[in-house]
Length: 135
Image (spheres, rainbow, N blue to C red):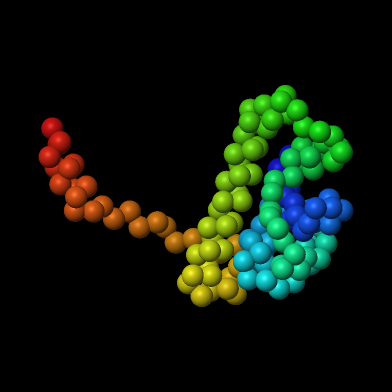
């Protein structure tokens, strides 16, 4: 169960949903934010039709897509940490694409760009508080 899958929702009819692999998330968010067209492993997508991108627990877990998830299923996803991993992957891809758009590096979207480390500068106010309470 190493591969995790997601759905690009393109309307209210589930037949229009396109299933993608986790390694395609950046490209999907790029299309969602910038428009354009792309062919994913699960089918072609026009960015103007994307409504949202969500986790596909059914395919990830090997469950029948018509099966209605219950409380026990969500507990299993939580116990195995799958829900958090998938949510984090969505958030990471979104943040990465936002960064690349803001820094005008559109050409790196979908190419597994490594984000620069976050600058952990400490403000003068924080330094003063730390010094004040230092034992």
